[in-house]
Image (cartoon, rainbow, N blue to C red; front, side, top):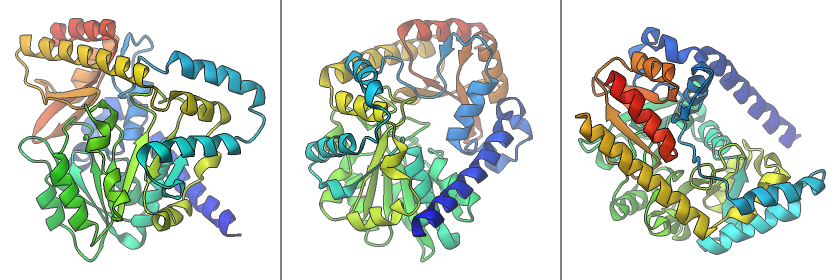
Length: 390
């Protein structure tokens, strides 16, 4: 009965979000009519990505709007998917255990500290539902990835937004100052989306150690694989030290699994028991995806090559922006954000008309463009279109 209730609650919450998806389907063309408070973060980034794709020109030559990795998945991963099809009529319980074991061994945590799901999005939703209950406060940077806090707000929580620093990084001191007896969770995306900035590791660790004694801290590390030393920068060490930290990881970025859907969180076992009440967990991941994740996890040569290509495309983008007289925020992820000289929706429309998909934001009284890093030919298409309207 308990499982039935939990699943019904989950279905109810996703139905709320589905209604939101319908509302946002025209977001790209009608953002000017949306209240200013909502424009600041463009609502739920997951839904906004979907809206941007659906509203784009039918012929998108350069898909640079969803922070996807165009260089993956790897050859070994594709082979594993094909081989898994013959036995995909079976539930992949044993293979899930193998995958969880691989992650546990690499990160040095017990398997009981890992909860997997179909991408990190369902786990962000589960956290929104649990920590945002009873009207609790969710503290985040602004702008940052809005999936968790906006879902929580839809379900009755209060979203407390803290402006970024002058360097477009999370203002940890200001976020800590916002904690009250109503705070349910502090959410930090590091590297941050959409700015691409990364926090000093030691400062973040000190913050997590202090704050987690008061309230849980959720650190979303979706883009951490783009850093030079992901393990050193990760807050998983804080979980291992016993802190009340939740760390989210996804295969959607450098691994190239955005369409395959595989992610997980690492936290204290008791914390995961709470999140399991709102998550489908392992049963949501398909057998081919599990096989793909086993084949691709820590596939160093592929990851190194994908990162190298990403960095080359990013440097090319930097050069284009500089030549056109534009500033940009140096990025530690697979996207770059820069201020533009026209209204965001118009800029996105003009780029879309030229076959290039991008995303836009408005904050600090400026219009901004976020460009995902693509293959070099896609970046050249961006450059050609950008020069026509910049």
